[in-house]
Image 1 (cartoon, one colour):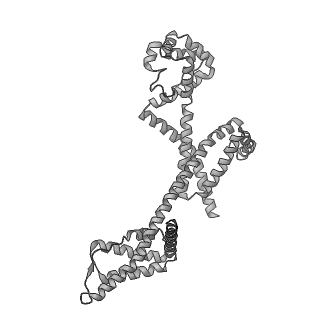
Image 2 (image 1 turned 45 degrees about the vertical axis):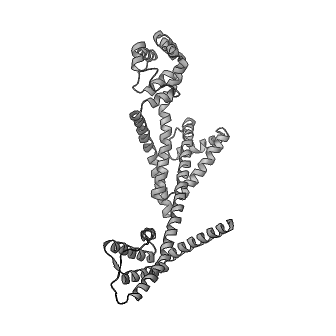
Image 3 (image 1 turned 90 degrees about the vertical axis):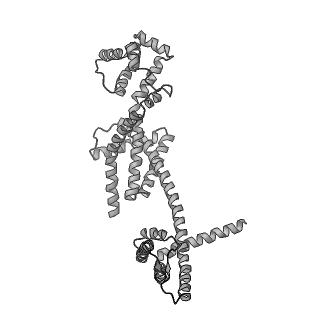
Length: 364
């Protein structure tokens, strides 16, 4: 229950963080594009035909006075021209027919368009795309913000099954909504409005607001799908890494007996020279050390970790007496045998190797 409460609180915090993170990312993405190449916006608005402002650049304004024409349009409408190009275009296109009428009065500008084989329709298309630029970038930031939060929840707070469950519900909802042309999603408008009233979030909750939220769901769905893909890749990599680790620690485990036998024979054959030293052991105990670091709850493996650290440290600083190495390895083997977790992993890898060997035999 405590874990459920903790995760519920974390989920609420992440939900609250979503909007400011989205706003920050949207602004950052826009500024990044501005720094990298402003031509990206113009190529987007002209279907990759032009990398510069082909309709309203300073050079064109000097030749055609199009800026003055736009200012006059705002005066006729009784409105003030804004600094934002997107907002300016949006206001101009509120009445496209009136806008085109005024533009056509500027004969120099129309001549310019004709010289470039452009039409007023091309102009309207360009302006619509630029006016919609913020929402396009916002869609990207909605997706990226959601993906970042999902990864945070997964990596920092161990949300996984919860995210998969929500992704499944969302995928079913959006798929049904798509197949029914929005009929299914509209079923939830009144329940959402009721919840909004009960929680006093928005007492004037309208269908337009609900529709706006529904429009953003595909970006959230894509973020979930991206998370699932990344999670699948990570799991595959972990599985591969675990197999390699199991192989290495299995090799180490069975190598210990061989080394002990060699050292025992050395001690017997060189009983008159008890100070023979071992300068190098051709076993990479680092794998064993890394493995024990992940099994902190196992008391036997904690002792194995301590012994391994001692061996690695002493091996780097000086050659070791055969007796010391022999005693160390005997102790290490004893502790490894005490660990149920370690033995289970060794046995599992052994079974895997045997099954693979049988399969190869059958193939031959």
